[in-house]
View 1: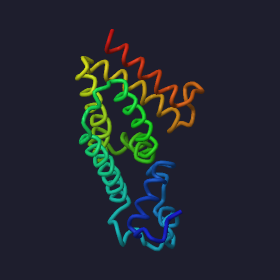
View 2: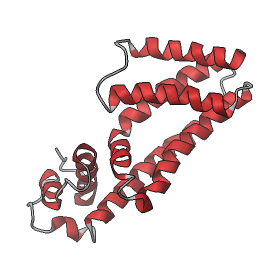
View 3: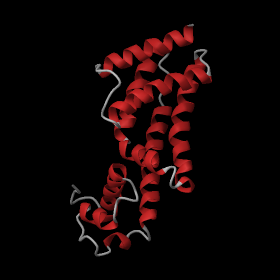
View 4: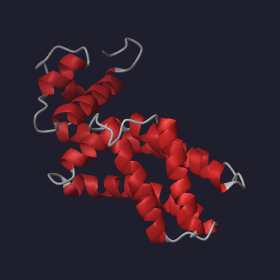
Length: 192
């Protein structure tokens, strides 16, 4: 439920992204966004802040991408640890955290990228490419290949996505056990 301290525009964006992620863009009426944001449904409150429902989608995605980019820049300012196992552990924890924090964005990108490729292709590329490029760079410093990076990161993202987005992990395992196993797998990939 919206907080009284957030601006109406921010509440509309928050609720729209949540609803788009849960139901899909087409299945989310403007009146429901308004109701969820604490406005009178159907009174046109959304259109005092946005020209169209599609603009809400674009602004919401851009806002979440800006947050994601800010986190990446902060992480980029941290020098390498000099310990690949420790760095891989941090990467894995970050992937789980990023997927948790950006569930709404990811659900929207997954559900809407085919219907609205003109709006979302850049966002999908930023999310996928940005994460992959960072990880490939980390593995490359240790002799890993781009293909190895893609397979390693893909396995972690698939596991985390099944758990977080679908609510059904591939196996019933503690997250730290999954991360430790993944780190060992990547270490063998690089060393082998």
